[in-house]
Image (cartoon, rainbow, N blue to C red):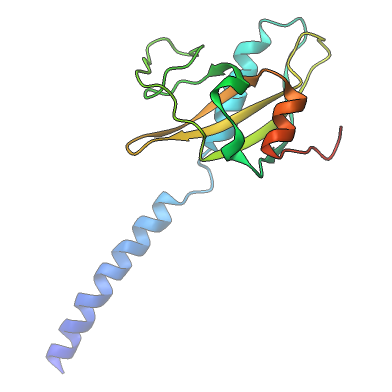
Length: 156
């Protein structure tokens, strides 16, 4: 009986420890990294336009593998890994070219009354064998790019 208790404890304690680690790391108060990058982009780029930029509807692209480097007019991120056109914080020095196509892609409608503001942006998960990070892209031709990657907003 004594050895049965020892075996039970030996199995139960690691399972409890793993459960505690999973619960601590799966907190609902952790911000979504995509949304963080988008909000930072909207805040920083909003200073360029006469009217503020707001995030509208966002949808996941059905064909993220179709997004190529030539579809990006400019890239924005604080990623310490990848080179971007604009850094929100110049202390981060990205040193690697972004791998294309991205592993995941979300299309975001931008709301602004400024006619020069972009109609839509995309936020892409660029990932290589060692690193991964979300990057916001202003696209060259929103209508063509969104159609190519399979994004369709419910409200046009």
